[in-house]
Length: 422
Image (cartoon, rainbow, N blue to C red):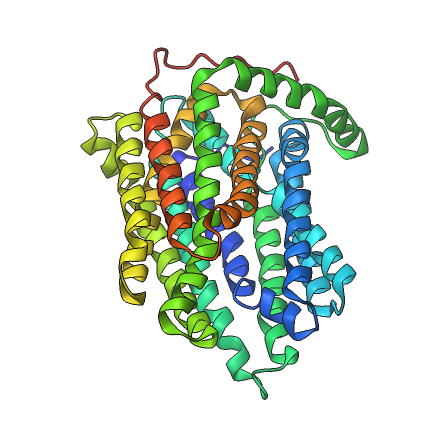
């Protein structure tokens, strides 16, 4: 049995592993769609492939969260890394719609498996070291590491194809994907080494895994009951869904807005790539500001997150009013505000759930985010028609709702959560 970690040691491991987790995601992000296009997929085909990814994540979010709570976080995180690596290698080799579907399905499995266990492990490790320790600073620093990993990865993913001969062919575009696969293996090895078990031993071997899997339905059921009965958890899930809708709008209408401003899709691709890299960096900075935002709100996560959501809404609403530089600045403001608010929302969630349900509750939050994004992708293009202004206004409206919902996150009791029976 490993010695218990200190609060500081758990925080360092959490931040480092978070950066390692998102670096390969950023690395592959700039070229995934381009690679599919270079290998003959139409825009409709690519949309179908990405929809499969979203569907896989949605279907598996709660079961995989329950698996982490039942079996333990480390085995689930290792399985996530292996599935993600397999998906990236499959993506590198894919040459038709169905092989791309296979690749994105594997990546979706990996994404669903890791949507909450690492954060749940960190909070449990901190609680084991000091039951009264504040997890918000650690969540904040991890959010910064998330943004930094995505930013560095996006820059490298854009530059790697230029190092290969013939940067326009699929052989050059596959380099970032292979690099991402290698880095995912490194991240998986780091997880196996650094994520030490927390809490009572769960046993070992096949019997422990079988017992854990049998416990998944009970964990999911108990967490679902907790979420439906707890008004603050319902509000956190509503926030997640609304933010997901807004993020989908920015990812969808942002490139179209830049293309309309520049008059060139090629130039728009380059400009929006820079915008996203800056946005990821801004998200990292914003996450570091979460403790300061809470202090400015006199310790109230509700007031602090509501103010940040209002700032994000104003930034999104103003996007159609300026050129590419203004768009980039406003996107950065949005990502700073959104990233600063997330640790405040998450701190409410963690105070409402116990150790045996934490990963499942985080998976429920991630599921709500994905559901909101899926809804936004389906509804907002029809609402906006051929223009983008209505889409940005609708996204701003979603963030205004986030601000209103956040104001209701004031807690009447410190820790009302019950421990899971599993």
